[in-house]
Image (cartoon, rainbow, N blue to C red; front, side, top):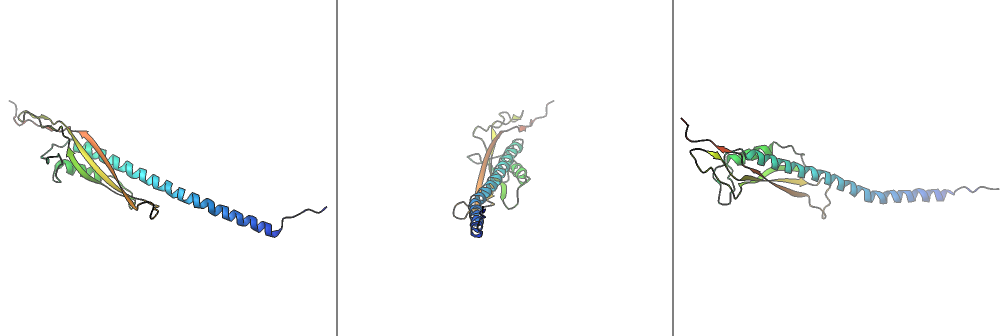
Length: 171
């Protein structure tokens, strides 16, 4: 009885079909891998921006407010805005993929009130609102499908904890 051995042509076809299957599988797996990398960096950028915004609002809430415009937006020279910006600039970022964070706007809430008796001093009422932005560059961008860069915004509010000292020294 004679045993049949596979012909050499059949072995070559088998190896060729494995190569086609591998390349078809890689066409699916490589974009999936890049999408996972994009999502991880996006999550890091969003978390960084959210933490920076929250910390800036908390730090800005302890500074005595000065004049704001009609909508409550504080000028760049405001100590509140400068304190918020200093906290935000100290936040870490990934060079190249996460640009920022940066302070977009610092404003006082609509219910902001100064202490009613300036001689006695007292607590300020209301809150400080901070908006920050991070530009997120996609590490694995697909031209024509996904943008090269996207902004991520965050907004946080924190109650004012600043206190106006009394203007008169008690006897």
